[in-house]
Image (cartoon, rainbow, N blue to C red; front, side):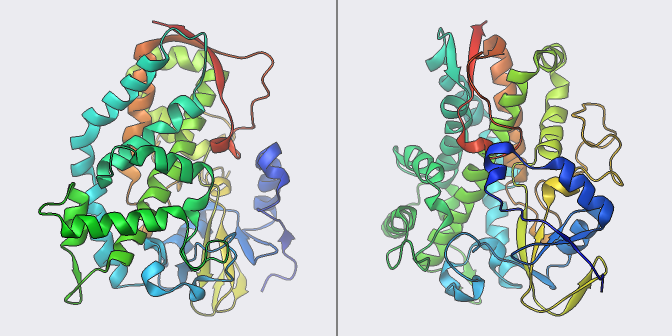
Length: 396
């Protein structure tokens, strides 16, 4: 075992204001692939991140940090989010996600995503100053996920509220919301029951989940509700971070705006570089399912290991000039912003579609963006998904 591990607290609340300490992360990478944290361990480099992410039988996902629970072992089976479910059930349920969110489905909703972006910008047209976080980055994924799930007319507004207040991260077992759970739990559970009683489901997603069986038994309303909540977590809570990062960079860098406006084929590359350089999910938590060794460090069953996705995506051993935001990288998709392996984000293609479409539409509707002089913009990336992004807007 490595004798002395560097210390790092990825949950330091100061980082919410100052941004991730990328200079410190670079130093940690130089010192070694594993740092010690108050929770357990933190992976700093890409090689070890890949090793862990692909070893799903050795490192299990645990989404309980910050929810008042000590670990996923306290969560009833019916309340597990998709990444926390073990095999073979995980693979069976994941296929339902693929049916709802896979590339073949994503292509079909591109017109809806484009229409959503256009309507949002048309509603803002003529204003000198708009908030591209609250007025654009937030509502896009809310409208899209509400459409995919098949929520009622006010569903997108509810998703926006629950994402902004963070309650979407919780479930009934969490002390803060016990015993009934956060508002999204009751909302989705009631909606599933209504869909089950209806003559026909309101969406392909409901049809898929209501018709599914695991080991010969249908999924319960509670299980379906928590899987739909997982879909909201990934499809709204993190995607709006991606969109906010993208528009923030375009506000701050007019030359980059001009480059994309002149060559629209660079927009997908821009989105991928945003995912790498400004990782919307800076880390993910795992638990050791057995005694193991990673990066030369011995870890015991039950130990926490956090994968520093933002750090791995700037690993000097893996990328040339990793701290620079560049559109000329030889393999733009070479990053772990969506994770990797069997548990890679099932909504990755949808997030990419929303990112590309949002930027394309913005370039079509707007001639120029410029920052508001007296506004203090948050660091990029950091807790950006919660901060205003006002911009002076010149409309086309």
